[in-house]
Image 1 (cartoon, rainbow, N blue to C red):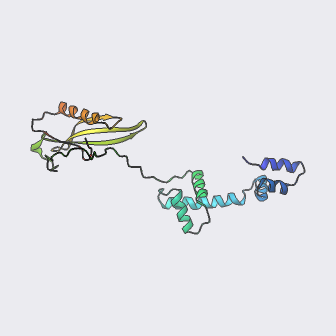
Image 2 (cartoon, one colour):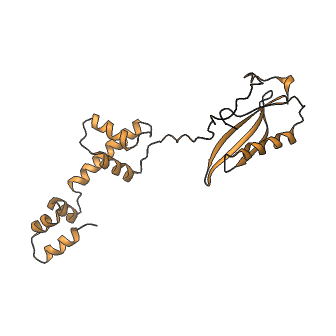
Image 3 (cartoon, rainbow, N blue to C red):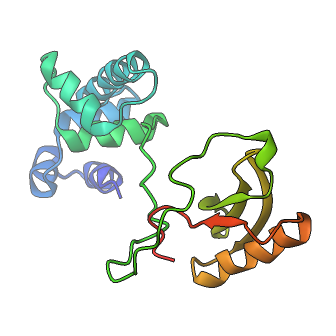
Length: 202
């Protein structure tokens, strides 16, 4: 809220503008600049700084946010605070790019029993080995309603997804639902090997 209308009322009442500005801790220059419709010194400085901010932002290909823009401006000798830079960046509608925080999907269980590696880490395609080696994987998809988790069963020989299931959680049920889906889609023999998702703890 600006106090300039109050000072204007005091001026019309014959009171001292200087005294009113001192009491309200407002710049007399800014008051008269606003009254005349001309931008004050601070507004002029903000406009010039905004131009510098936009130039730095463009040079960074739109990746820099307030902290990096402020650091570059300080290196170039600009006299400005970080909060002021952040305010002007918001006012100009500029925004830096942020790395999406890594979402942890599976947590290894240190107490889980070790299982023998029956595929011997051999994930090479093999046209003659269809439906003999399957592996599972879990991924996550960001949606407007939150995270959607996807469990897949992949035929190692063909690299094709042979079964899948989705859920809004990462419980064992998600992986368990993907396996029957694969069994319905493909015919497999009794020697089928299913490699569990790496580091899943399942």
